Amino acid sequence: MKVVRRLLIVVALVVVVLVAKTGWGPFSNVPSEVTQLQAGVTRWISGHQQPTKRQGSGQASAHSEQPESAVKVEQVSHKQTKQATGTPIEPIVAGQKLKRTYKYHFAKNVPAKERQAFTHAVHVYNHTGIVHLKAGKAAQTENQITFGAYHKKVTRNQTSVELGRGGPQITETVSFRGMTIRNKATASLNITYALAFKDSVAIHELGHALGLDHSMARSSVMYPLDQGKMSLSPADVRGLRQVYQKTKS
Image (cartoon, rainbow, N blue to C red; front, top):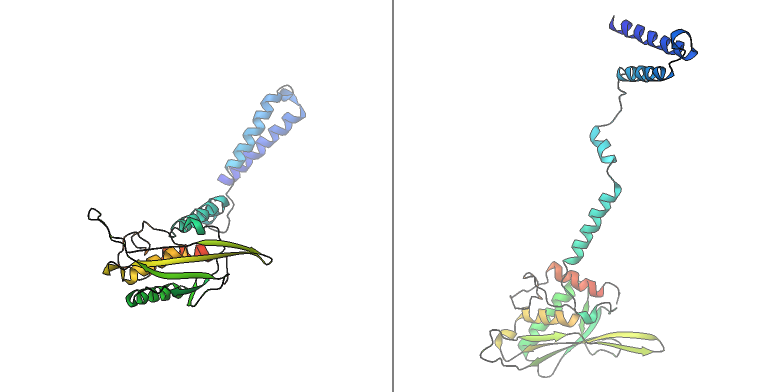
């Protein structure tokens, strides 16, 4: 009965609107009232219509309304965070296209204990697969590392002891074949102190020779103070890859 009653009310309202539009009788001079009456009928009918059912969940609709740019911003920020966690590199090698292959040799005054330490350090860096260090004399166009030894005694008022030094030396040669960039690096231990003959010290100094700079992360072998680290941290590996990622040999 409720449905029949609603239909009768709708029919009556529609008849009133039609009569008003024709200008018959008392509705001939009330155009504004007709407009309001039409709007009221439309709102009444719309309010009593049943909602249309759709497949899918409300959660899926909410996700589809999310701006695509919001997802991209999160991805860019994540990539930038990853890049910022690498061990710093020496400014002199930044932007240089250094070859991955090195020839290394020992100076005449290097004792056996130091040779053992640097030989282990070479193995550590070769294990990364990023660089290839092999014994031998380098040609003029090849990268070279010279392992040396020196004596340096610290004064009594110093609180730390220098155990080693190392670093890259970049040279550029121009010929009819083009420009050749070469790293003529050195890594040495201070043989005045027995603490220098440690694998961790040799790994640190060889890192400098290959282009790694000091890191403030204690997990890094490139931390300024020796902590006995025998392997490269993930950040050290990322820093090394940053130096040699643009070259193949």
